[in-house]
Length: 169
Image (tube, rainbow, N blue to C red; front, side, top):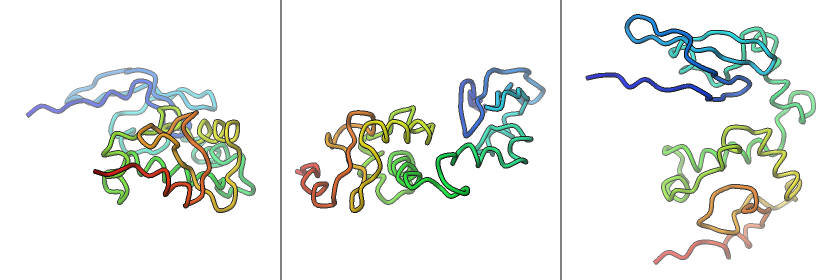
């Protein structure tokens, strides 16, 4: 049985982006060139990348700069209030183990690529289009069959969301 190699080209996680294959070693090991947001370029093998949630370089990770960058809009390193909204949206759409996946991801509902990959992009788009979350409201999609994307999100009360539920035959 042959192994299928995962192509990391242009994949972004956290504060780094994989650029290209640098070298293919014996036994199928692959070394990739990775660009960190700080400007450093380094090499990492597939096994290393597979385990990491953030492709930032080691000096940035050691210095804790990735946390500071990721949550730059939050005070004293606390998570921005919309971060959990973003995480929950991604979980519903991407994680088959999530209890609500059957109502979202299993139906083909996704977050647009830019939002799925970057909290900063999600946050900027949300603040620009619908603003901060008002008390008592959560993120909703007016087009219940549409994706989480600019133009198809709003802040809604639980009552408004119940009215907007899809009709099940």
